[in-house]
Image (tube, rainbow, N blue to C red):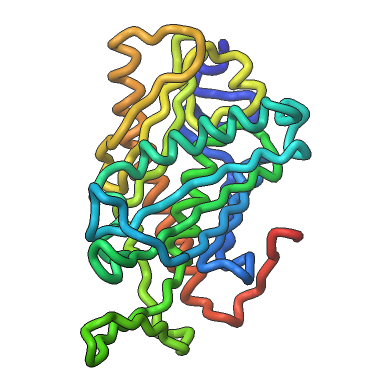
Length: 277
């Protein structure tokens, strides 16, 4: 707590510094897109599977995303029994709230035929190891996996009787990709004493009674906000934490976009570690 006042944490970081982030995409072969993120000792694997479905009644000309979070009991003993299920549901609900705006993902691009067919993206999140700051790491992994997602191009053909026939392209390079520039990342700020820190370790989380989760876009806009923890936050602290979250979020997005484009530019010859590495 005393180190926070001096902008110096136990591991030598400042209050607004993230731990080293390792990003690798295309790590699971039987998915439409995948990514693995290591943030300190937090290890996350995300797979995206594109399947055809029926558009929702309230949004007949859009596809949609479904989230499922599996908290492996091997990640931490706290995930054994109902503990992992409850946390998985909480994280999934947070992801739904994060993506519950039209600017995050172009859902109209997932529509094949209005009211009849659309692409449904099933986003599966697996927590391999828990070392603190789960929400931020998961949001980074989800954005990286969506960046890596390739969806087969579909052609809708009409026969003589007027019925529609759907034809999928056989060419693996004939696909559509989602624009992820507006996909937000979660920035968690933990209040420790009179200061707040980003990317808290497990030890720092244990010292914090209240945290603020901010969903921040690459332009620094906050799309949703949620307080967690039993402690309280005064209005002045919330304002300061929001300003910090916007500032840190813009830097995080820029660094993530840079590394994703750099990795993609290496092509199929890049060395892969894989999720078993």
